[in-house]
Image (cartoon, rainbow, N blue to C red; front, side, top):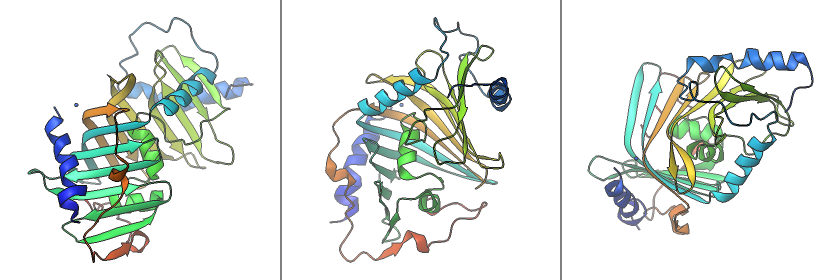
Length: 304
């Protein structure tokens, strides 16, 4: 059954029409937190001049509890977004990208052209990632790894981590239980820094002081070099959740920046399981994503 007739066209077309939008035990640890988190003042901070929270938290436990509850309650997300990718001196945009997610387990990304034509369909779960582009006439499939998503889309995140990001969450499937947490009065933000069990990377997260939403996430390698930065802006109430309307993903090591701007988004609406099944025309050739070369820093990935 042609993808352009059922799997890609009708659902996306209807969306196109609807669119209009651990705690410190030493002084040294606290100092490291302050030194490591001073950069937030260089970014837009709409909370800086607002009143401080009525009760200032001294532990990150309520923050993690809030995120854990949110993850349990957010069952589906559907949205229409403009996606822009910057690679070195080049830039490209997908004006209409349909996003469908279910329980942080499966994701569907569908690119729609200016006259409603299907550009690509990407479907992934925890194990497998697949991409079909009608103009190429072949199905690309492979493991759901950050390397493969980088090859296809330009984002060095696993599909599951990407789902957390697109829902306004942090790309950490397991939330931390230790680390250094503090309220930064100057910025009117909470800040956490730490590591995860068995993970040598260092993480930093800033939270706004009222709803405890993450507003910035950073990840460093062993040498302290920045691997990933995610910024969340323009929070809007959506079906009982606060969803950022703009999400910026910076990846200095691979030389890419991807910006997602939601035009429309819904939470916990009905999603048909069939949306996460890849249907392609009979006889479509298949290629392993792992056989593709990773895009160089000055080149756009395949679907752009």
